Length: 367
Image 1: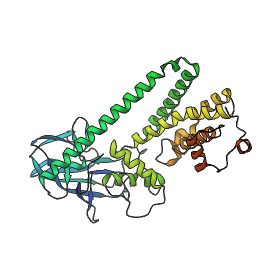
Image 2: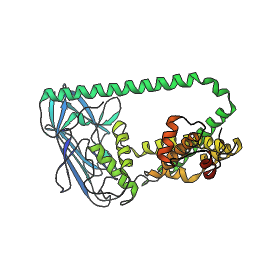
Image 3: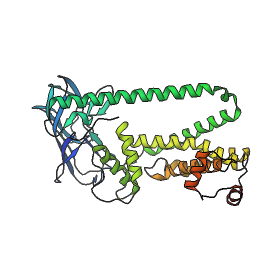
Image 4: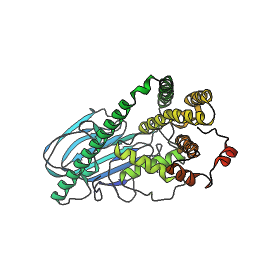
């Protein structure tokens, strides 16, 4: 459940381009069309709705020229090189507060840039779209939209709490399995695989321009389209020759959590680490236990997937999906197979799957 965000956002003018509506106010080095060595300026205008009067703290963007004006108050005005406090506060009136926010770069590439209109709540976050309007609208309608957003956020928290409770309950019900040497060994292997990935990520992210994705690359296409999805500008205005599902998945993840490359990398690395379990089970069913341990250990430390899991491409996810499909296919060869396994195999593999075809394709020893 989520509120209808049509009509929300601020009016944005990128350089001399026609105005567009951005649901969130954000500028990054990976935006489509952004070039760090070329001067850029973006100006957002509109109204910030507040249900009641109060003091609000806004984050002052670092490493970029910025200016924020709310009503007739200049909250901050930062020229390049000017050092300001990390936060600047302003008293907001109840209702619609006129707002102008400007970001500008000087065309000197100094690493990764990510700046936006952020405020201090429970944590530092971008101002949600439900508070932003390009034009003044009915106050009652704005209040209802905000209430709907609060309900949606509460439901998401409740759903997350229920999912955690279910996971803890499930793990508690199978706690006896921890006594198994196989389970303990696989747990240690998954932890080691994730630790190796984190070590690589820390080393990789230490480079100043590690997060600046190459213009024209698949990485940049996926990331730029995902950021536009969060801004409410989807589909992209021009065709792009990459898989749209990746950009949509990234956009949904960014909408629910935050537009962060590090978030994507950690999620992909978690999936890669848990793929150890899939590799182990596939090898165990296809060959034997010793082969399973060898295959799982090789996957845990194999450098190629570790590298690709740190990239914003589908290559880090393809082995995970491949392992899942391979395991389900092996399960579907059981005699008699479960109905859902038979249907899945019919959709992804040749329609006539029997013992003879299984022996010809893989000579898999069925359990």
